[in-house]
Length: 269
Ligand SMILES: C[S@@+](CC[C@H](N)C(=O)[O-])C[C@H]1O[C@@H](n2cnc3c(N)ncnc32)[C@H](O)[C@@H]1O
Image 1 (tube, rainbow, N blue to C red):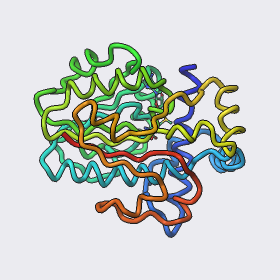
Image 2: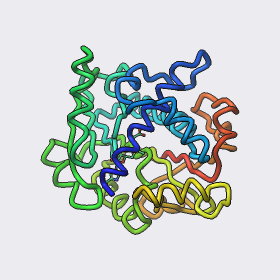
Image 3: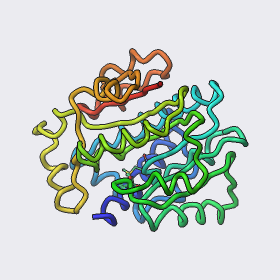
């Protein structure tokens, strides 16, 4: 199970590498090519053939870049990425030197990512603190041991994670992060809508995920209400309504027309 879910990281890097190579790119990640598995284009074609929602990776990446930039402009100086995977924000964005970016993921892959990037001669623009831990368990003490300050605001990045956590585990995790979110904190996340799991268009893709040991478990009908229950003020968008987000550069239709029933959410408290 853990290996299967961790290997989805190769897909994320392949998707970002492909987008970056386009002249009309909506997201630029020049380091994604260093982090793909073998045959990234073949992987991408296979994912698309199964109706995997690959384009959400690009849209949530840009959504997250904009949300993080806004948090930094408010003076936030610690960010925590839950399920960071092959994300390279600490390298590809011009972040403040005094920002600490905690990257949390299952044990086994974070060190290798930073080794690959360092071997390519790259240095992060902020301080990155990798924390290998299972987010279904007691991850908060590992984060505290790494130096996270719950009395200071945090920008939480939760991209591509809630798919793999059942609703009860997701709710526990949201409660845990909320308890470590001083006023001024923000959270950006994506999560399937209830309809995603019942849409016949997704049958083959969802069956493949079950077969390979990384089933989609997470879903919510009402992310704004879910977050409000934990004390957050949230704005939630589906791909068809992202053009109403006042701070997001409008994503091109080629990206937002290819997936549906997935939420993009940003919240503050
Ligand atoms: C689809 S990838 C998304 C990675 C990255 N956030 C991105 O958008 O490219 C899902 C990530 O969540 C991590 N993950 C899933 N379940 C986890 C758990 N229980 N504890 C820690 N990390 C987990 C996986 O290892 C993987 O890195």
